[in-house]
Length: 562
Ligand SMILES: Cc1cc2nc3c(=O)[nH]c(=O)nc-3n(C[C@H](O)[C@H](O)[C@H](O)COP(=O)(O)OP(=O)(O)OC[C@H]3O[C@@H](n4cnc5c(N)ncnc54)[C@H](O)[C@@H]3O)c2cc1C
View 1: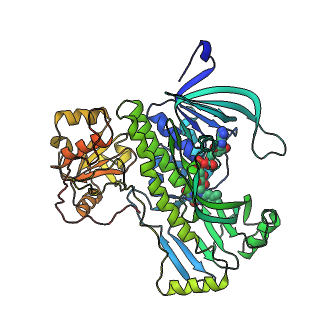
View 2: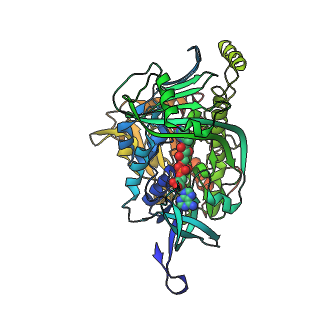
């Protein structure tokens, strides 16, 4: 960041200007700063929002937090979920999500957490970072896009009586970024400035959300899930160890004002056997759950991320998770382009990769949301009968990356593991046992093999190129092999590689596998990566190099991404 003189006085220039300091802006800023990028974060509130919205996070999000040194405080209070159950009014189970399994990222598959703690943990990573400039209590209002930068006028804000959000004052400042990201929430001013429309995928339901701090420990008969009672659908969730959430659908004839009265919450809580002795309400608000996706996520030097780009009903707890994935995807790509490692075309893969992933989660959220949102008792009875008959809502498979910076074979088919999350398991190195990322920290690529040192399969120039990207080459093998870089303590890498019939995988900076294959196919895989990254010296052909993984151990196994 630097300040220019003369005409440009008082104009500060950053690599990236991030508008919005919600979980997505925080993740993006922390991730960019770790890559050495200067970042301005603009937030109209003087502090963090401090109120819970997202309850659920999955294992991928915990790995993202781990990479930003922010996992420990979140996990200390998070509640590893065992199951997420959907029952009908008479207590029959309609759907059960296995949220208790151990997942590919090295953690439990799912957790319930308290969002303010997650935001505090991320904020701790940027608040004193020398590359991060915080504009807290400033509103970004006017934008101009130039050939090599984006300019925004910021107005200082102040709190005024009768206003929920801080109000602009006359005091202003101009800042400029080589790139600007609107992580400014569902009502994004950045999106409106760009005139980008959102597609409405057709969900519009109002629910009363009541979040409470536990005053004492108590047990509920129903701990985590949905009660799909047409008389009053209800969501019950732990929000970490010290808070809980209840959500009730707004019924026909009810108003927001009625539902937001404190007595309404206490009456509804009493029906659940919860009293003022058990909890203190920290927030009571009616939300409208919508499913909307912006048609365009990039306009030259400006990007949309998080709720600014997409909103989805919360029934799968994937809104914030999706936004944090956007941030991770965007951070390494902006960094690559700024370092000259990739051409600007790499940035077009941001929407290409993330849109389809978000779309799938949105459809899953809508289809599952229709179940509790059935208010007609006759329809609800028919729904329950269908479930008894084995019917399940039509939903896409667990989302993965389908296109973008992924290895393809000569027929343009995805190679094993491409687009899935790469395994993180426990390894031992120099006598220390820990999760892989803790023992091999970094923000670049990982070339990991269970067969031999992967360096041995690559040419000098390929090694030099991968080294220049900060790649970690790791041979993970059994105890007793003197050549290994790390010991596969629990044999998880051996099992995973065998299940997918591969010897080596290239993992991208956002933990998605670029591609996997045999060591023999590794040089072709690396060439394909060079092309996929739009590097200056690689022709960006549509069909990538032939990487012919020829699996040794038969067909790939299950996705392992859930
Ligand atoms: C009831 C409910 C339950 C949910 N449950 C889950 C769940 O279990 N799991 C999950 O993953 N997601 C869940 N979500 C969704 C999740 O809360 C959101 O997706 C997430 O908070 C969005 O983060 P964000 O950073 O994109 O936007 P926000 O959190 O909205 O942050 C945007 C920020 O930008 C600031 N801003 C806006 N305009 C300007 C401007 N012009 N200048 C400066 N600052 C500006 C705002 O003040 C705000 O702080 C839930 C949502 C709700 C409502």
